Image 1 (cartoon, rainbow, N blue to C red):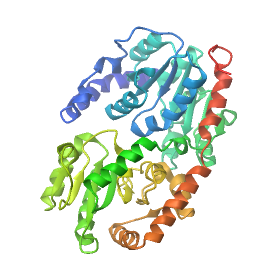
Image 2 (image 1 turned 30 degrees about the vertical axis):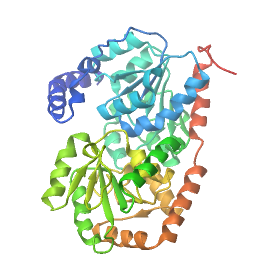
Image 3 (image 1 turned 90 degrees about the vertical axis):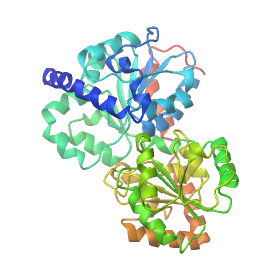
Image 4 (image 1 turned 120 degrees about the vertical axis):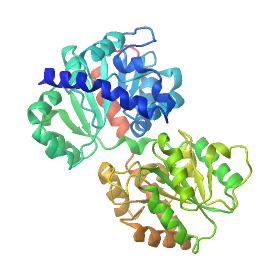
Length: 430
């Protein structure tokens, strides 16, 4: 089966590169470092690294606290952090800089994977959430490299698909030494698709341990004072195609209720910045781009502030009065609703939260967020939040309690990793 998979992957590789080149027309960063995706690297070869893989921005943000804790504990240890996306790459470089080696994960062909392992020779492999790569996992097994899936999650919708491919999935999971699952449900789902129950542990969600950076919060508050001092800023973040239209239509109705409202849109993917700008302008809304306003004084009459920059979402949350986390009004599965909660902003999200089901349910149960299933619910929720300051403050306070109560998973993961590193790592601090 592995040979068939590898052959099919090779056949599709030209189309993958064509898609990458096409997307690069809007995101030039995607044209860079193509060799890394085939296992060719400019860096000098290294040995005995700890390899951490985070596919994109959300996963990268989650692993930063863990990587920093590991760097403190294993002070002379080298780390390689891989991503698949340009936005994930940008965050790794911005947050971890040259304290780690960062490259793109190679495509899962035998040749590219072999070159990756020959170049970096990892002693431990950490994979975030649900990345199952047959050739990568098989080489880890053949080279006796402990392989751990951390913050592992599996949506209920994906389980039947994996079960239909059981003859293929079970051997992949057999190469995994430990699955550190977010919840009991995630653990059971991995077992359902073929994971060894003895290799599955429940550790919670390390995304609760992402610290709210005080410097970013201060920057956001300052931005609010400088640009939006007399505006009620509703940030709608990490939006996807077809999702912005909901907020454009709602915005028109809200202007009569909240004449000081400013809609701050933050599209998830940078290649959509121009598309979203045109969408707003075609609807008759006045738009100002963040990059065009960096040197200006204040937004007074504009309708939409479009954030066309990368890596600033936490700061922008702190500049807002109210947050809606996108990818949840369209069937994407949602994004991290803990980020606005952690900076003290009331949180809203839509009905499609399959990637964050437990967190969303927990926030709702704690009366720490508002879920909106449709456009009318958006209108009703905004009216309530805009007019009732006590309600906003209750949401903020309850969210803070909820986040703090669920912290600590990173320390559990660190303890589990120590079991694999203690025997062959000598740089442990006391």
